[in-house]
Length: 295
Image (cartoon, rainbow, N blue to C red; front, side):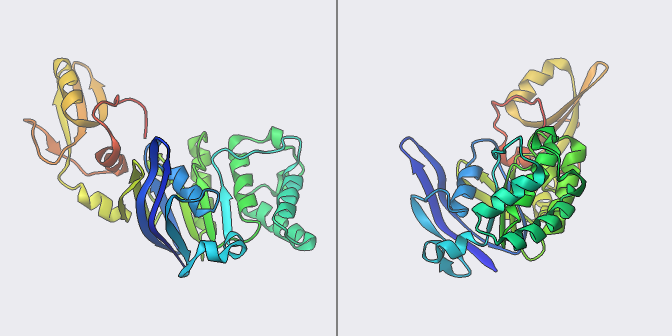
C-alpha cells in the first residue's frame, strides 16, 4: 500500500500554504512536524480530499485519487483538529450517527462500534453524554469515528492538543496499537507526540518539505551541534540574539544555556547528546522568537 504525493501545491490569493510538496508513504506511522502555520492542516485536508490542490496530484497505489473518487474516500479515516460533536449525544449514539453518514450497514455498524469502544477504552462510558467527557475521552471518541469504516489511511490533525501528559501517553499507545496495516499521518507541533511512535518524521515549514527521516537519522544529524554553556546574566540578551536557544536554567548567580549551533563558538561550551526538542529548534525556531514555553 502506498500514497505518492507529486508536486502538490495550494495557493490562495495572497499566500502559498503548501509549496511543491512531494513525498511517498507506505504502511506505518508518520509524524508531521512543524510550527503553527507551517501548512500541516492544508496538506492533510488535501490528502483526505476536502481541499482541491492548486497543482500536483495524489496517487493511491499508483492511481490518481480523482480517478478513484468514492473508492478513495472509502479508505480514508480523518480526525480534524476541531471536530464538532453533539454534546447531548451519548458516545454510542454519536458513533451510530457517524456510521449512518458513512453509509455503513446498521448491523455491521453495531458490531464495529462495540469493537471500537473497547479499543479506545470507552466501553463503560458508551451511554454517557459527550458533554460529560474529558478532553482525552473526546479525542479517543474521535479516533473511534475515524476508524468506523476500517480505513487504510488514517489522518490525525493535532490529536493530542489540550491533553495532559498522561492522556497524551495513552493516546500515543492507542495510535501504535491501531497502526498495523495502515498508513497513519499524525500532525503535531509537540515533539514528544511522535518521537517514539513514528517510523519517519516529516518536517514541514512555509508549506515546503524540509526533510523526511527516522528518529535516529534526525538525532545523528545533530551530533556535535548541541551545546551547553554556563553564562552570566549580562550575556543572556546577546545569546538570545545570536543563537538558537533550546533551554535556559538559572542556578544561583549563573545561567546554564542549551543552544543548537553548527560550531562551538563559545568558550567553555560542552557538546551534549541531542534530543528531539533540539531537532525542532534546529529546523524551525526563528531567532526573533522568545525562548519560553514548550515545543
